[in-house]
Amino acid sequence: MRKHIVAGNWKMNNGLSQTQALISDLKKQIRTSDAEVMIAPSFTNLWQAFQSLRQDDIEVVAQNMHFAENGAYTGEVSPGMLKSIGVQTVILGHSERRAYFNETDESLAKKVDAALANDIRVIFCFGEELADRKSGKEEAVVGSQIKNALFHLGVNAFKKIVLAYEPVWAIGTGETASPEQAQDMHAFIRKILADKYGSEVADNVSILYGGSVKPNNAQEIFGKPDVDGGLIGGASLKAEDFFAIVNAF
Ligand code: PGA
Image (cartoon, rainbow, N blue to C red; front, side, top):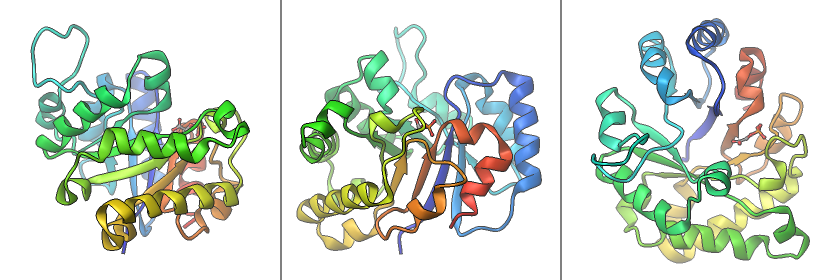
């Protein structure tokens, strides 16, 4: 059975004291859940988050990393650096990274390889823009994002990937894909994965939905058969809302 996962992407929010405060709120809300729960604070707060959550069922994950192991890349963080503080999962390919930091399918393929070479699990994000959907190209766009960055992987490597479908028009906009739109896209993704890697692999990969998931819509979205969880932005910054979403399973 594939895993249910709810990951909070804090983006560029929360300094040290806010991180400590939010983590202490999260600790008060933790209940047993069948979903894996993750938070992704900024690089500067990863270590603190690790220390605070050592005993708890919340995994601390990174929002990004460089593909090189070390060297002259001012301002970047390597997979080995993440590993050295205990990070086991990294988010790659978020649409904000693609839009504002020029990440491409090619650079993401390198990052995916670097993460897997370091035994770091990947939450790989992708999704179409509004113009793509308006012109009926959403499946073509999503299909090529997945193929270009991931289809060089062999079956065993691919098993370490979690996918996150995040339509760009739904991120931070308050406009969510309807549960049916999410389901249709997730089913399409599972089909292209089955064609490439076989139905067993496709059935076992977790595909998360992201884009304005809130406590009031999570249950309906997570109720769809091919939606295995969520990548949560804005609503992950309030412990109560985040756990209301986790508990939607
Ligand atoms: P949002 O962000 O929930 O604020 O729309 C989702 C994401 O960017 O991962």
